[in-house]
Image (cartoon, rainbow, N blue to C red; front, top):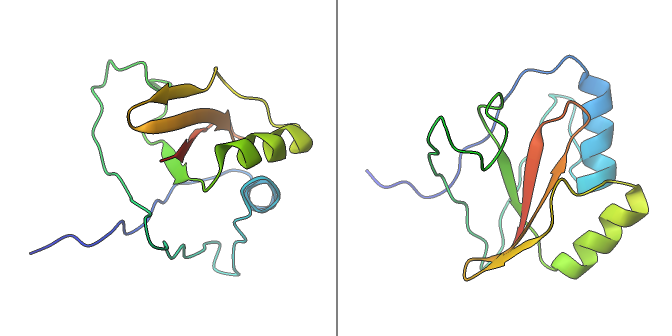
Length: 116
């Protein structure tokens, strides 16, 4: 057996319409009538599946899952977030793996944005 990509991320929500509108406006992800979307990565995109210790402080302990979206240009991404009034949860992090920033959706779920 060979894993060839990421299958999906699913969670419950109390605010279906609010989240659908936020993800479309802020991240450009339009949800279809079945309340989901399919992202087809282009060349050079990667999906990372990784476990974190239950004591890790990388994202809030009460949040069992965090999404990571790869962005083409962090500079453009930051300008877009500023225009939309979406604050960063902490300062951008630059490492040998790329540049990372964190935002939260309307339910407080942390989302990591990454430029490789």
